[in-house]
Image (cartoon, rainbow, N blue to C red):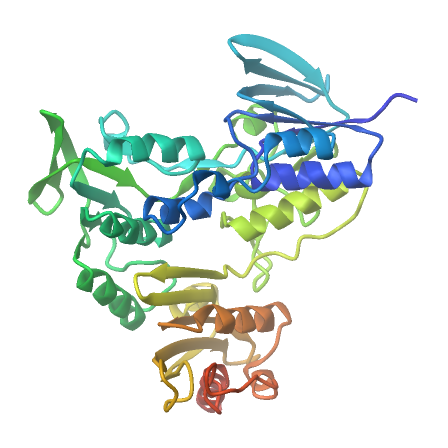
Length: 447
């Protein structure tokens, strides 16, 4: 009997998770990965910390070497191999590698081609403009960084803020250009303002409600003109304005695309072709609160969806549980976390949203190191179901945002949160756990 052949396009989080799962379920099969870059299974999320000097060793960003996959897991990994087309009738892919074109046939296919940085059109042909999506991007960026003293970051999302801190660690002059009135999506005005205060206190200039209109290179520097009529000179521009799914080959093959142009998949990571699965940043997901399709490219979702795609491509029937949009980020001395919907987003989704904001302490107030912790919690008035939360503080945020994410996954009400047996010890939490206090105050507002 001829071996089944599984091909995975893309070798980062989702792709290698899929390939590894296929190998485990089908040890007798051929598992082949085509990766356009020179690295597999690496931490893109760790790159800002390497730039800032917190993570010293470049190689530590690579979770597993190519040789580990090839020798230990018997997965054929092809680096520098770009898949250019998929022929669904022939069950065949076309790829280019080292200037040559080749073809390969599959029995089952997993597309995990990820996403590319979204670059404003007026910055695409400008020199000294960088993005940070891959380890190759990191190497190019770092090789140019020592020669400049002034860095401009476009975008005040999670990556933009992490990079601002990294640049300050490198003693660069840093400014952020943000086209909206808030930094970080999903945070209300009060909390967003507190985060902005932290950034500016660390000598980062923030230009809000502003866009870059024109960039002209002069003697190696960039003269930047803004939408507000002002201008400045900078050494480089780093774009952190989101991503676009790499779904072109899927579209050209006739696979259905969904929200944000990502490959539309169901809860089994199946496309509209029963032999083709998709996972990671190239695929849609769905929101576990509303059940609607969503596109939120995050590392944890990519790893989980890749594993499920591999499981099901190999004959399993696992379901992806969806996402709540749980995120946490370090902004200088602040920890910032969110999960689910903020108040405005909940209203736009049709909920009768009610929110409350409390400020407590991360530890018992008398214990050394205790600091303020602010939680904004949102619920639906009718069902009393928890819809989301935002937390900022100097410690203990990740622990608490995960508790609330778990509650959302479990479809708990605000009242259910009052019955949870939270841990207590002065070095870690006050007697009245801040999550409990937030739920209690919100429960009263719902009444």
